[in-house]
Length: 129
Image 1 (cartoon, rainbow, N blue to C red):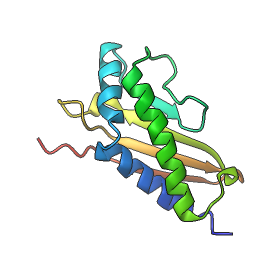
Image 2 (cartoon, helix red, strand yellow):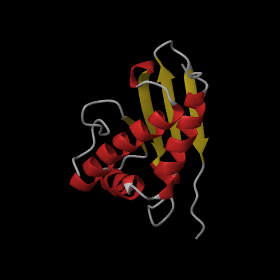
Image 3 (cartoon, rainbow, N blue to C red):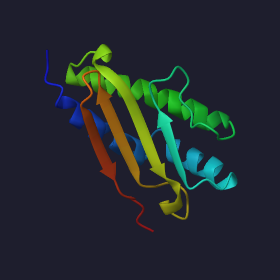
């Protein structure tokens, strides 16, 4: 079985994927957070239907988060670590520090293994306006 230390790399890859804009999570999340006057959002990616608690439903955000969940499983598959080894995958978004266009914000990916070890990766804003 591969080392669980590979989860550190998975956290890094997940955070970079979120910030890349490919899945459109940040622009949709920024839109709903700004409309709701919310400065910080968190998502548990391993729930059946990942979505930030307390925020109004926005279909494109729901779709983007479900796609991101699938992308995480692909990232994990590349590490060789079984899904059962992962207890939690939380994404933290600092919406208050987002770019003016809403397409980038600081993101932290936190992966907790079943044995309780935590692997975290933080990325600051990548907007180059």
